[in-house]
Length: 405
Image (cartoon, rainbow, N blue to C red; front, side, top):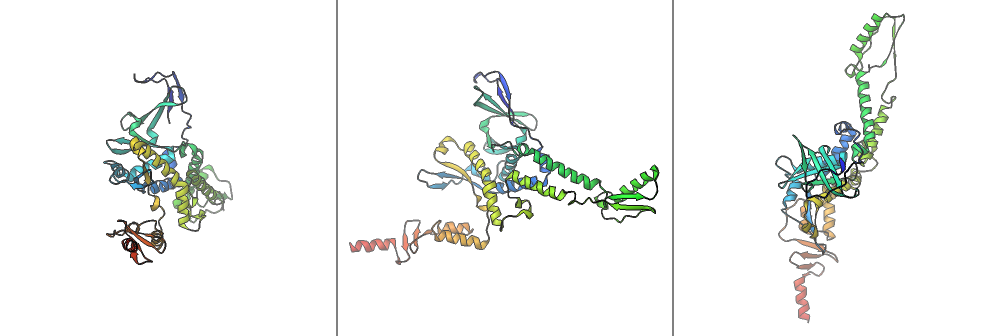
């Protein structure tokens, strides 16, 4: 996204580098962001992915050495990532813009300032790398084209989410250019052509004046989409022969379908999500699962890794802290399916009674318990167990055993 530089003037504390400047090998973006988003399939794909991820809550967890995972409550960073990112923007707005830049430009940037998070446009960010051996970067500088001037930003104040690619605008630029030209051609054809499109023949030779008058009258009455379908009235001795310029015969419809398919492949999304005619799966749930696994999870994982890297300090990383999105909201089931799933999880002992109620948005009971196997054993938080088949609890069983001794 910028220069790979050796030998730029440096502060005194830095070492001296070789005097050479090497331009980045990253290819240029072949189409602008604004032009790309005018393509309906591109805008639909970006909105679908960005909206899906931006609405997901993200939480902070700790995975201890004994695999005891704890959800960290009341952390200010979690509040910034889920609610108010700063005084002006909500966290959802920030996440949506970040995902858009990630897709289109290959990188996204968030600026950390005084505990708040601010979105920085990737197209306005310039990156410069410095090296001592022309192999490994010794430091990276970022320059942001701000509202009034360009500003140098310390990498310590940035959250950088890198896709590992050059972005759709570069890697898929040729496809997007063709799609844009196709839309321009279709629009121009509909705007400039006369409807019905055809040829006017005269029985005798017309003068230039008559031709000009006929042409002007014809374009005024019949040209343009607003005049489509008007009945044509010809003067004596003239004949009209329609020409076949239907969208199907011009292959506009087929070209449009092909464009949608190519854009869907660029964004790695099921085509059926932006084109109902391409549904390959029997249910919406199967489509959603494919969308989650193949499209969203790689992006979500990159964002989580960036938050772990730039929002956690070394001590927290050693303690096993990590950020995770809650993706359960993506696959929403019917109320019946949800109750059946929760009931099965409770029966199999996957979660407690209160955890099951929480999944159904129901209030907690005063005393929580978990079901175990062998005819079900109820285990309470305080350690008390009730053996349903035996009709006694653990304290009664212990008393019986002690009396037998």
